[in-house]
Length: 200
Image 1 (cartoon, rainbow, N blue to C red):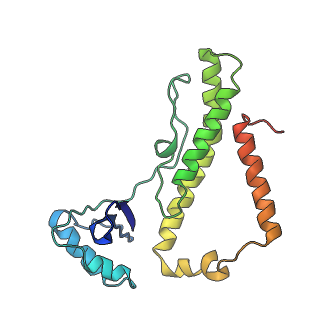
Image 2: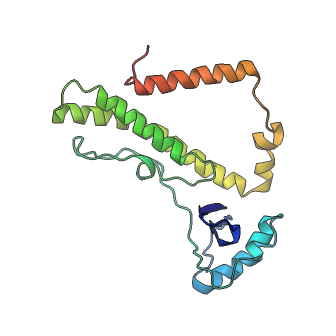
Image 3: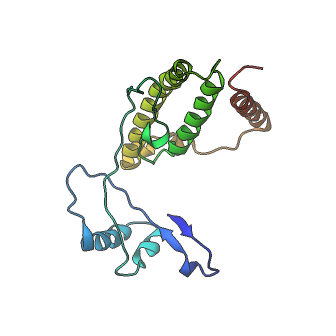
């Protein structure tokens, strides 16, 4: 559930985006006017307040149905550095792991590092920079797509979900020492990205 427009003071006037996902290997037959009734029915099984949210969607609300798609990243032809891919174009993944934006930001930061390393602005140097970027991106993107797909399957299988770290170990706040070490590492990574990838 997300908010797309909340300029009015009354939350009843806000524009919301609601989504339901479920595992289905067969065609669902959902299209047009039969999507919203299916959402009502599926929403009955949700806990409060989500069941109430789905129950109160006004009849006639525009809804869509589609299947989640993904593409495990594999090498592509950059035409000698003239074109490359980044973000969702390079690694379209399902969203249940929440890694799409992280990988897109990594793509942009890594690409910038390789561009800054160019000794001169020539087609050959650009082609080499693009190739270095892609060689790093391809395995990372491939792994991220597969992990996201695995997570999507896991969150739609209660038995698998119950074996996840969240359910077996729970959540814990980092100790001050652990947080300080994490902050220091994050700072090093950020500095390296802004310094053109050079160790300092």
